[in-house]
Image 1: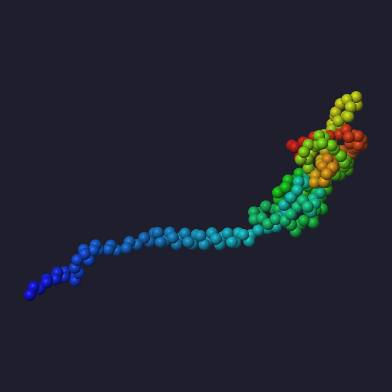
Image 2: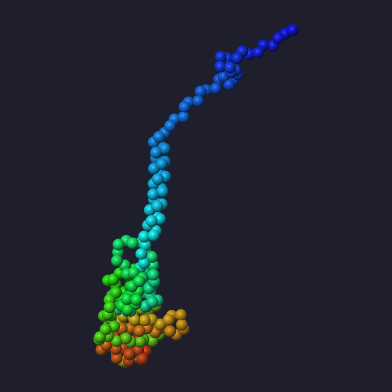
Length: 221
């Protein structure tokens, strides 16, 4: 009887392909990368904490929502409360709004302006002694589009007939005190201007005769 021969086991007790596996090198440790990862995690946590703390470090301020001309009084519709970061600038607090509403703009203030104490005055230089407010009802072509309260305009005499003389300036720099509601038909040409008191009678007479127009002075705010 023929006896089959079995392959002899190697010294390690393995045979075949298993005995030819390559040794696995030891895993290399990288302490520098591990330390960097820890620092990144800690840095991110610190930044998040600072953002949370900063988000609560805010103060109340007053922001202008409508243009306010120099010398015009502040109105409730023209201001609003905003929360801003405390940058150290002495903005007027919303708690002082009653005092603001009892004062006048020292300069022309545009929408979006944050109020400071220097922007308001207790008395208006534009509405004081020697000034007069005059209402004008202007037709299309007698007033440029976009004129609003706080703008500066020239009030010009425009004779209906050439025999009455030439055009001339009645007020070189009049403050637009108010403008009619443009949403209402027939009211878009109504404006009130502040002029020197001695010029008021002639301006009123020209306006009543429909012989007055205004020209905007964009750079004179």
